[in-house]
Length: 105
Image 1: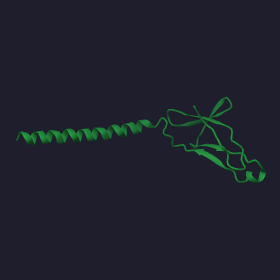
Image 2: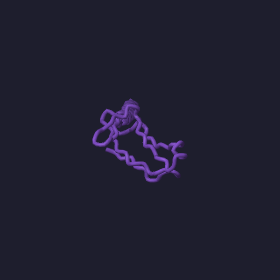
Image 3: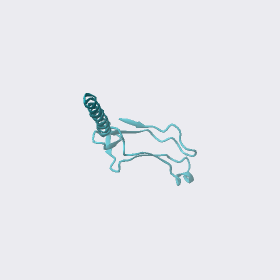
Image 4: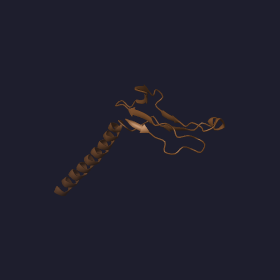
């Protein structure tokens, strides 16, 4: 579980309430709504700042956490890194064996 916390509000706005959310194993996200969890179907978590006066309310400011999170998404990165290391290792073994054969001739 994560907490999105605003430390400083923009001028003319109150601090937003903390927003608790979680990222599931499948990459989907949910926001805590009271005692329940609400799915984020659009893949984004949005925190709204409340204006201190009505005139400022027309110029709403938001903070967004992008939905393409890396949490739980690291398997793809690990596979990519392992593939690159395997390719480099294979090339090193190939060229080393080739060099050994040439020196034997």
